[in-house]
Length: 239
Image 1 (tube, helix red, strand yellow):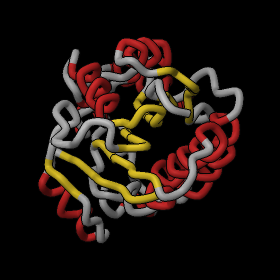
Image 2 (tube, helix red, strand yellow):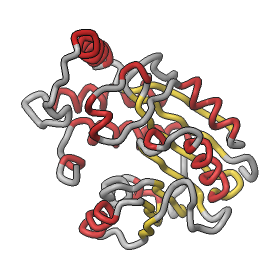
Image 3 (cartoon, helix red, strand yellow):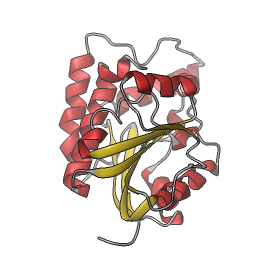
Image 4 (cartoon, rainbow, N blue to C red):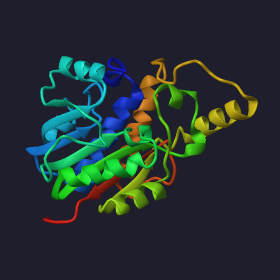
């Protein structure tokens, strides 16, 4: 994953979508205090999130934090998103990418309440999560995805946590039918593919372009279906 995050079409395309959402929907100023909750190997916090200010990363994995340090991240803490060792109302933006899906229910709600606590009044939250639980497959098991979400489920969880939901959209829509057929076929025929879905091959540039093309649509009216779902939400308070 450490190497793939800087080369693989999915990571590169998702970075473009995230930046487009923040620029067009949140319209954030620079020099913010940012939390990357579940920072993994540090690719987001040391690249596009760093464009907006100072980023603190938290993750439970010591190995992931070591990779983050190799990317020259310095503000790091080993912690769970369910119990952040951080002061209340101390961040302008919380980013969490494919983290809540690893929490056993109702852990996702507890994590969202922690994000809400850590944000300043008027602060922003951006989430990315895998979509549709019926799409769960062997790859999900390998990367510890316990559950997938619909946009409606995310909206409900955000509101229960005290957030104002500003924008919801699916992403990776054009590849959605292919993945749906593949996952459904594997389930019905009891086929278990051992090949990694993250392999880099000749289609890498084409798939990256597809996600880049989707970015303004995700940030605009939104997409009705896809393999991932994005949410932008705000903590009530100062504008």
